[in-house]
Amino acid sequence: MSAVARVLGALTTAYGVAVVVRPSVLTGPTGLGPRDGDPSPPVATLARAVGVRDAVSGLAVVLAPRGRAVQVALAVRVAADIGDAVTLGVALPDRGAARKAVAVAGGWAVLNALALATAR
Image 1 (cartoon, rainbow, N blue to C red):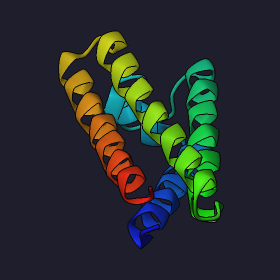
Image 2: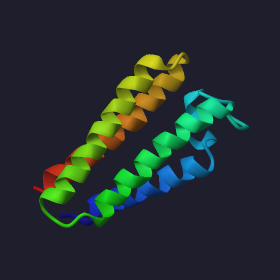
Image 3: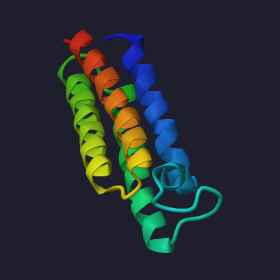
Image 4: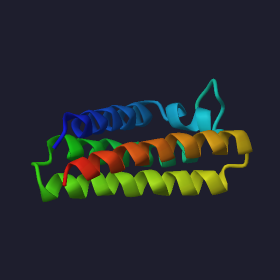
């Protein structure tokens, strides 16, 4: 398994923790909240849930033993990133923010898919 997958997992974990601590890291760029300020409590709660998912799944990539375990962890990351790209791409009302969200989430899906391909 390449170190690239572990780095991707660590970066995903760091991003997830950042969103849990400060939901505006996710909500600001997506337009789900103000760019300079805190989102509403319900939106912050949802963002934190996404942050926890990312932190835990990224940590799984970092800590999983080689072989099937890391392949499953990477597949979960790919699925989550594709889900984010589709959901945000369809649901965000600001088309510019939607395109950016699709590009970012889709890019992460591709990177994790490449890491998965090298983990086989």
